[in-house]
Length: 336
View (cartoon, rainbow, N blue to C red):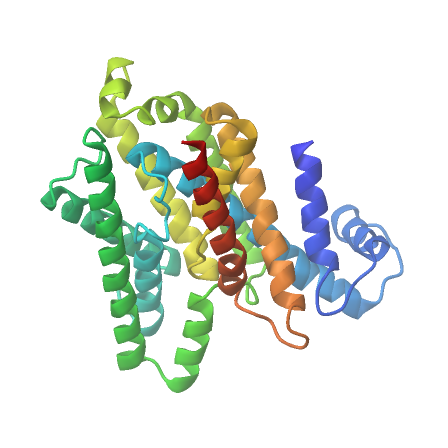
């Protein structure tokens, strides 16, 4: 059932846009490209479908799944319902690293965009951990609300710092044309993705799913705290390092392709917990699927909400995610 839902979402993302393309035409183009069929299809429609919309829909699915999984892992490890890559500073750090490599030439050509984004993501999360510990927090859990509050405040501080660094790099080193493009990209932009990005994003998303499923028992244990995880025989520090490092890498890859997109890692895990429960055996695949479908839908809306213009996808996810999160927050409060 899940593959069918994902397939239909990708097909919808390919069909719907500035101009609607019939599903029959899309299937003919896929048959021509994948199996060497010889259906008669308009060359312009074939180019739009294969070279633009299909790759864009697949990258949107990868990014949605990856960011949702990052939210699942961070919320479990930190025992904090507000933890997500955007709020924890990982997205901001990845943006800074990507912009530094792109505009200021950091690494003198030795660093790729994704490597720069990963370095920035790791640096940002490391700063958040240091700040949280300095505030008396223990990221493994154990002091409840105090630890959660310190981590969130440290994440906000880290996000603001790296957003400021990004703005400084753009102001100092970018031309006016570069600044416009970077600022639009930072709000989330799928317009420039192509098949090369699919080759990068698809393994990252699948790798994130496999890491989470492999450590699903550990994630269940971490929701009760690091001490509970240790009592179950889980090597707390190595497992936590693998999970956080893996999710930082996934986030960095996604940010390097499409920019920083908020609310996916925050809202999707909460919504899926209402539907499938908190056991990660079901929560991980459900969140990955829901994140993929959500971001494809957001991308469709970004193309049709304003006729003749394409909105940054981060604007759409915020317009949907903020009210959704407010509703989830109210329901959680009433449930208590």
